Amino acid sequence: MGRSPCCSKEGLNRGAWTALEDKILTAYIKAHGEGKWRNLPKRAGLKRCGKSCRLRWLNYLRPDIKRGNISNDEEELIIRLHKLLGNRWSLIAGRLPGRTDNEIKNYWNTTLVKKANAQSASLQSKIKSPTKCRPITTEPTTVDQSSPTASRVIRTKATRCTKVMIALESPPPLELQVPTTNQLQVSDLSPAFCSGDDGQELHNLEQDASQFFNFNFQASNGSELQVDYDEYNQDLGIPVHSTTLEEPMFKEWNTDSILEGNATLDLEAITSLLDSAEWP
DNA sequence: AATATTACCAACCGCCAGGGA
DNA sequence: ATCCCTGGCGGTTGGTAATAT
Image (cartoon, rainbow, N blue to C red):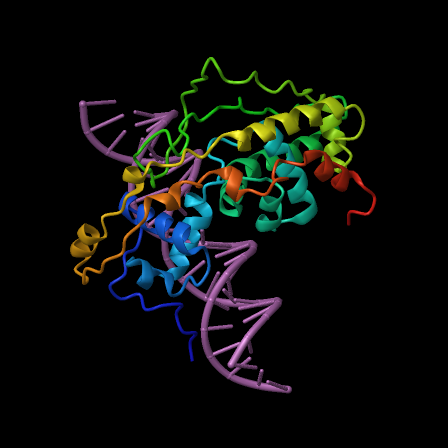
């Protein structure tokens, strides 16, 4: 006997989410909170599997999701954590506020695997000829200026960021010490990369991290997130019910109210943990 | 300019663990 | 103790944009 599916898939929408579905899901969760995923689609009037709703919310719609490319610092952290934790994406993501396990998994599978392979190849060649040092080539950090509020179009398709636009008022880029080739090689073998003179790095990282969260998730004015249930339900061919989404429900929709007070990246603590002898 | 290939990422799938009945 | 439900996780797939030929 096979396992019963999480929900009946008949008549359900599949594939990319539409902007309207996103609005409905967002509004519903804002009003009723997360959880009860199985019942959520029916109650929200969505023709989606509950699992799909959960995934969409966690990976895309959550207001504390950090959009934009992975920074070099995050990348280094991912690499180090992956070394320690393996493919425990949720654990890794838990140490990178605003990043989802899916995003990190994708990033690893598409980008870092190649770098890791290149590194190991480099390491092997280094062992054969120790004088040859191949530094890790890090791609230039790009800044995706398309915040969730920057556009009303909710992109659900894969988008590649190839053009970099840096706003004049943007904070100066992180002045991280670029690790020397030797340091990288050492880090390749042990989690001791961050030991030593990285106090300033961590300070900068912390500052940078706080910038991630000090912005206000632009509380949508009611009209922008207003969901026309009637129209949507008619489109779906389901009975119209009178769900009213009150505008005030969006008033406190910002990261300050959603994130915990200490949600800023405690990279220092993370690094200390990684470097501590107690870490397995 | 057209076509083929590659890169990327959102979404899906199946399995598993924890908790409640 | 057992069963069932729910939520969560990691692997994989499919679609599309970008790039190469």
